[in-house]
Image: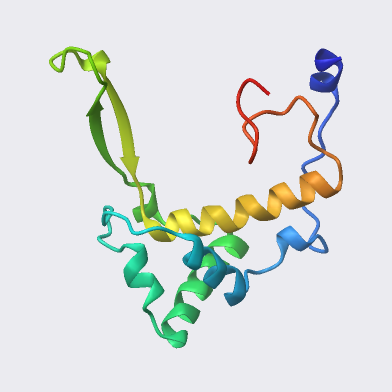
Amino acid sequence: MKKAEERKPLDFRATPVFSYNQVFHVKELKNYLKQSNSSTPEPDEIHYDMLKNLSENSLMYILNLCNMIWLEHVFTVSWRKAIVIAIPKLGQISTNPNSHSPIALTSCLYNLMERVINTRFLYILKNEKRLSQFQGFRFGRSAID
């Protein structure tokens, strides 16, 4: 049954009438800022606590930036940079490169936009029943599911 689901063709044509293709709203931005935790400043040295304390006018600038990226399909180059930190695994030899787990610190602005996009897509995929019951790596499900 899983093999049959994997063979189904997917239609990725963009239609502006779908809600996930619309511009972002300040409500979405504020919602994800509320949900975010304090973080270490990433490559751009901006962290969530800074973003949470911005004025409404400043949030609108960020929203306009996200909407411009979304509508023009041009991704900000600085958001592609990450600081990679190797975290040693417990009980392993620290001099062995394979005994570390890499963690990439990326821009909070990028992460914020990514969350809004991901939530939109998952909402549409779920409501239109486009996700197979075998699809893993979703909220509330593990890889075993």
